[in-house]
Every structure is written in C-alpha cells, then in structure tokens.
Length: 107
Image 1 (cartoon, helix red, strand yellow):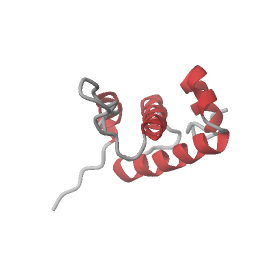
Image 2 (cartoon, rainbow, N blue to C red; image 1 turned 60 degrees about the vertical axis):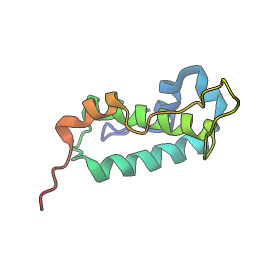
Image 3 (cartoon, rainbow, N blue to C red; image 1 turned 45 degrees about the horizontal axis):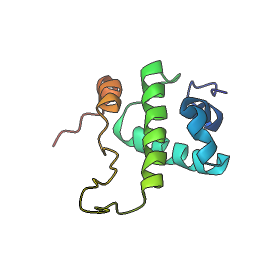
Image 4 (cartoon, rainbow, N blue to C red; image 1 turned 90 degrees about the vertical axis):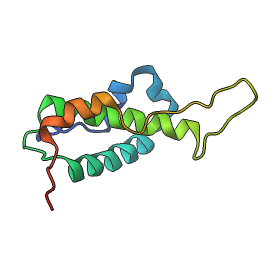
C-alpha cells in the first residue's frame, strides 16, 4: 500500500519484486527500502506527493540493493571460466528516472 505521500512501502517493494520477494523476509525488504529512501533523499529533491518516476526509481534501487545482498560482500572470480555475478552500482534506469530531480551542488 502506497503511503499518502506517494512513497512506496515494504508491501509495494515486495509486489515490485514479484516472485523474487519470497527470497527475503518483510524486515529485510523494509530495511533495504529505508536505506534506499535515505540515499535517494540525499541526491534528489523529493516533492510531496512523490511523482511516479521517483517512485519507480526507488523501487528499482530496492531491487538492486537486495540483488547485491544475494551476491555477497566481495564477489570474485569463482573459477577459470566463470565470471563473477555483479550488479551495477550505477543503474542507468535509476539515473534516467531521477535525472530531472537531482540536486545540483555548486562550489
């Protein structure tokens, strides 16, 4: 259920994740949502109510956060022919959705 400010809650994040949400409990999804909400607020101007593009970017941030948790803290080569699984740290879709709302820092 989306909050009155338009921001997603843990249930929205679980719905966005689809079947993959079964990999995490509600507290873990809520923790990732809280961390990514704070990260987004530091880099973007968030109007009230939250517009759909920022909401989508936030849900995508949560999905990436949880995907990184499955990989582990320090992914590395697993064998001669295996390439380590890496989730990009800068998601182009998040950048595109948040672009118009980014805070500009001068000086």
